[in-house]
Length: 220
Ligand code: AMP
Image (cartoon, rainbow, N blue to C red):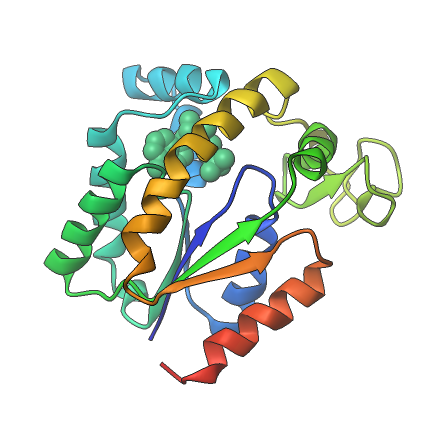
């Protein structure tokens, strides 16, 4: 069973790595950011609240996030493994996650920490563009990830957009929150032998090769 958690600052490349794992191991990718973004498009009280909170770079209320996570992890497609991404984001969420896993009789599994320098993150975040039709991700600051035609998706011809929170101010808020909270989460997991630090400044394929080696080492 491959239950995988990614801990990484915004734009560290966890989405890309998660996609590679999903295709290879056929397990679902559970991203709290994606789930919340979907709800934020609904014109409801909760949708509007989530939209505003995400745009400011703040965290959505725990009671909402916990309910969404528990519901999602209870589904049958998580029985053979899953990737949890964007959760937990602080110590309290890590404790709650332990409780949810215990309740659902699921293992914590592997915790991958992607370490990336602040400069690299800033460049990635300000250049990130996403296709509004197929969700393909590009980066106008990186030659090998630029779309062929400006603002148009190579794959489906859809229009590319910039995430509302992909700006320097919002990045700084999200990054500082990440740094403040993350060391306590890592400490929480450190003595359980589940943490694997990966150098996220490397090329995409080198990172995924390293992750594969770890996942296949003990055949868990
Ligand atoms: P992400 O796509 O992981 O960068 O998340 C985007 C935004 O979604 C965050 O800045 C938060 O506003 C919200 N969010 C995602 N995960 C969580 C979480 N575990 N707890 C609270 N808010 C979250």
